[in-house]
Image 1 (cartoon, helix red, strand yellow):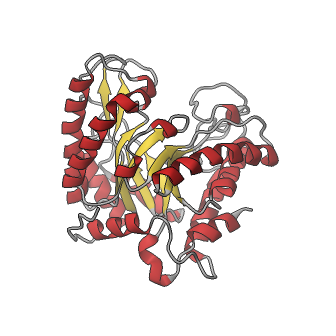
Image 2: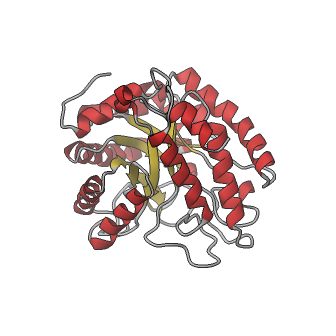
Image 3: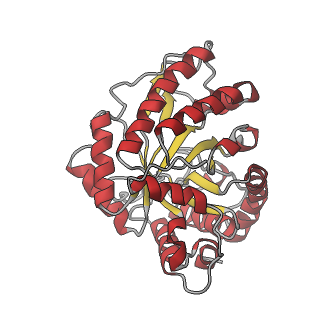
Length: 355
């Protein structure tokens, strides 16, 4: 399949330029000034040189533990000034920007299991921070805003009405397209997809077997579920994260940052290629933001999710090139055309509050 999968679904006619797919990287930092200065600007230029068109910035807020409701910035949260500097550096490098706030547990633990004892307090504090980020995203002409990331227990049905109200409030501040970044295993339980412009999924799908054939077969099974969620929502499918470590056995736990196997660049390369082969040919596939971009190439024997200096980067670069240079006649109405039009409008400074 290789690049042909993306050619079928992501190639664009000149007249359909507004529907350029979302293809790029997440670029996380964990410090107040991490997005400011020469190193971040250089990282943006390096990222753009891969052919990517997008970068997602991920300011991270914190709670003390999974039951805590006090959502707050810490010394590990990128400052607003730092974010503005990074957005401007990204735009100067020719990149479109997604602003993708996270909330993590300062004491450690999985954010999907965050379950505050006072959810009303949690949502009130989160809302205040999220609306501030939405205003910043509008002022800096970001192309996409993510209303939440991997908050599985906080997106159960009892919280759906709260999310719908929150999304309405975000739309009053940011006129561009919106999504939510759902855990791969919990996307089907999100009850507010129709309030958004994309079904966003962090696609860390486990697969048994690391050969190309087994990876494709395993991912095909997962793709049926993801495609069904997007179809029922009537929204295109955007992978807000996808990545995997360079370790033997990583296909069984693509989300895992730990040291659990021997260094193995082949697993990372094969998994990402299979992911693009399987999802890239879906008619409702709107793109992906790989996890993640690093400031430098990986050292020899690196086991992390860094693709810089590894064969896996070539897989992603091929996808970026294919989407930009594909010949032939593309689909006449890409499924993400409305969302892309919203992105173009806000980045052009046009007030665009179409629903």
